[in-house]
Image (tube, rainbow, N blue to C red; front, top):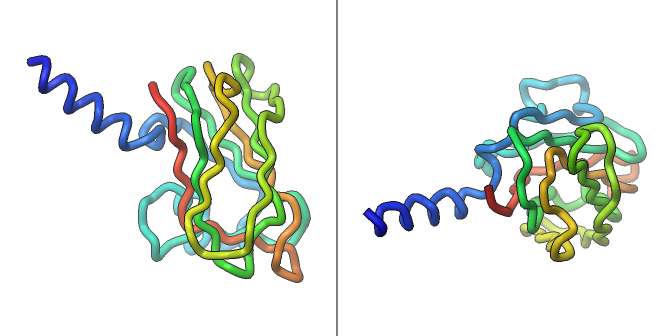
Length: 154
């Protein structure tokens, strides 16, 4: 019985917090085409789909959890040429509308997964998270994300 509990616990932690996401919102969608480029593709686990923003500065992604969570890292996979200059990580700990910045990460322009490790203790009891994507390597300010993974624990 103890072994079964351990296996289930490891499986849940390896999955990350994706299963605990209650809502996702984004600043924009390329050409208004939510079917092809919508927010549902951010955490679908499919490398063939993506969220793509329309043109403009300060694109963002907002995630609400189904309860208070411990967030330890954020992983992002961008399309090279459509990468923000930096990613600002904000969290809300009680009120899902009151965010505070806990980390800013300069993002190199490449296709690989980029891991944003959050400062220890900065993201405990998180009910919502917001990523603000500043600037872009694209001339028109578009951002494309193939994968968003939220790591932490229940």
